[in-house]
Image: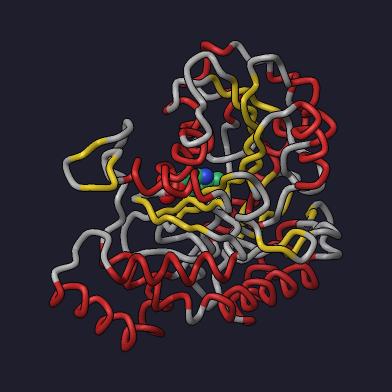
Length: 368
Ligand SMILES: Cc1ncc(COP(=O)(O)O)c(C=O)c1O
């Protein structure tokens, strides 16, 4: 029986081992363990590649979510709108500022926050909208911006899953006033530990990013504003710097793998493949299908040695942590339906055509 893991970080490590070990050694021998040249070099390269003026590395994507809202002055009593179908860290960005998350349902085809439902969620307390580019596909930023501009509220991006994805030919990360990225190991661009970042084109916000990540300080022991310790480790900067040389090729491999899946699954009854929206270049952090009898299919694939995932089995409006918000599941019909149908298939650049064929044959066998 062929085994197909959900991700294969070892295969990628082996392919860059000869570049990554000397880069790590360089950090160790220079003892630049926290921030330092490896991190600032990577910040510059990542900003340039994303067409943003400033990119600031931090210790996780969650820290980036927090900074992206903190630097806008989001505070207790404010509301922050975000999609009901996302990883919970998007909401922590709001709660860490003391604000209340307000969930909005997603579109049935892109699975991203639905601009048609946004306006009804805006109140005089709304300070920002966080668009998540879920699974690697950009949200419809122009449609969202038309609404946020009209109401004078900030549009922020959560790019944890969308490194190098494009919206109308522009990379995500520079489309909102602030944005955040995650470099968690399994992300499209992953560190060898925790990592994240925040981007902006605004020099004053960028200055705040840098100060807040380092105790509210520009000069050691002089603290101008409230801060945190959100610094990135030097080793992570070195690993990410090496991976920058490969990320575009890896992104193309993900897209090729998605096209193979689409082709082999297109006529399988009961399976709905992901739709790439006309404005989007999807980078397939996750390849998510919808399936009738999803739970049985997942078990069948497991018995065939194929690992799959659910992103996400419990939507935010139904999480215990947000029970006090009193959300009604009937307000989120699309997210509710997705939670019972979505299935994430194995996806990583090193996935082979044979593995994809095996996964698709195993799905067809179950569905026919
Ligand atoms: C959409 C989204 N936002 C935020 C995060 C948080 O990133 P991290 O795990 O690096 O804190 C993640 C990933 O975990 C994510 O998928």
